[in-house]
Length: 301
Image (cartoon, rainbow, N blue to C red; front, side, top):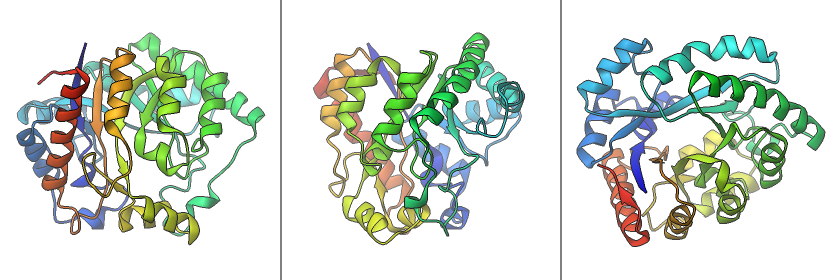
């Protein structure tokens, strides 16, 4: 049983808040990530978008593609329309041997709007989630037939954020709809981090290790701030940061117990002026190496 450790380049290149990371380049992100020890990176918008260009770009930095974001719009589109919208990305990820495509519904999310409080996110009834889960299942089955895993990203500011949302979506969807297990979004969303892994561990195919600074998340909720306000204020951080609150050793022990074998990806968007990307990414990597050793999880370098 082995895991690989990857990273999202978002600490160096924030797609939602590009001005925050304007002093950094994607080339620096990949070079420094690989120097630290990360062997995979999730796709960023400022990477080459064509398949062969992206392949060459990753190979030049000796780093693998370990996933990447897909903005879904199934609430607005038919399944057939959504298949056409994601077809090229699915084909690219298959060609580059990505373990999954990270899919989130973005047609109605408020996560990227700094003027809208995260508390004002869209909320669906259980019946509405059940209908959506049916469409998502069809999409995931199509992806599975192409050789790609759909990993659904529960996300702050989106219609699938809370524990009840996650449980309803997983219960109503086919097994082909797998769950991106994101510790930071679970904690921020008020969900049970370990309980979610215990309940839906058989559906987890991809993992994001992200910590949370609880005083900041309480402020975001209490002062009716946006998700992006929270990012700027430091809502998220890396595993191993003493300001975080998640017990990653307990999470890793559970992953070991469920025979998880896949990627653990560090994703922690922060203001680089307050949290230098290299320093914090190294902190996260070294912490994961330690807790994997404690749990008996072998890390593939």
